[in-house]
Structure formats: C-alpha cells, structure tokens
Length: 129
Image 1 (spheres, rainbow, N blue to C red):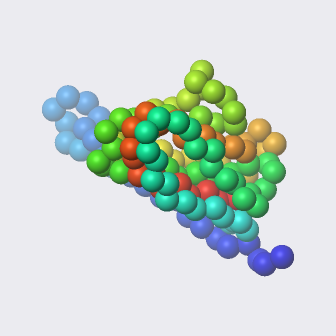
Image 2: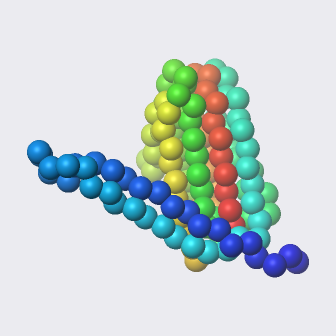
C-alpha cells in the first residue's frame, strides 16, 4: 500500500457580519491525508438519479466530498447521502458548490451518495478517503 498523501481543504466566506459593516473574512481549513480517491464528471440528462461510485474509499467514510454544479444547469440537483432518500437531501443550485470535510471519519461517515436531477446538468464530484 502506498504512503498516505497529505491534503488540505481550505476556503473563505467573505460577507458583512452586520448591516453597514465592511466585509469580514471567515476562513476555514482542515488537513489530513488520503490513500484513495474517486473523481467524476457527470453529464446528467433528463430526470433520474446517479449513484456515485466510491471505488476503494475506506469503509468508515469519505474525508472530503466536493461537488460542483455547472452554472448553466437549468434545475437544482439534489444530493442524497448514505441512502437517506428525499428526507435528508441537500439542494445544490446552478453554480453551487457543496463541500464536506471530515479528517477522521468513523463508521458513520459518508459512505454513499446519489445525485437526483430533473434536467440536464454537468456535475463534478471529488471524494478523498
């Protein structure tokens, strides 16, 4: 088995924290390492669902999940985690990004994901485990 590869997930949310105040930066970061990855670009058409193949991602769950929906999508894509169905899904609208970082997942981590769509959309998915 190859040595784990270090990674860092970073981002920043910039907005005015209160009316009339200037923008404030709210950075976030996590560091860990991965030994397996899965990455896909899906060209979804019509209505349906796409189960994302986690490949060899560890059975405790993903350390990083990053999903990007193209800006030209005409309808949102719903993200369902761990077979949760519609009750636990998250909406991702055109141009949106959904990121999850869990540097040390347990057996209750993200183990599966399904993209539910009602129109054509380009979706990029990256998973590190």
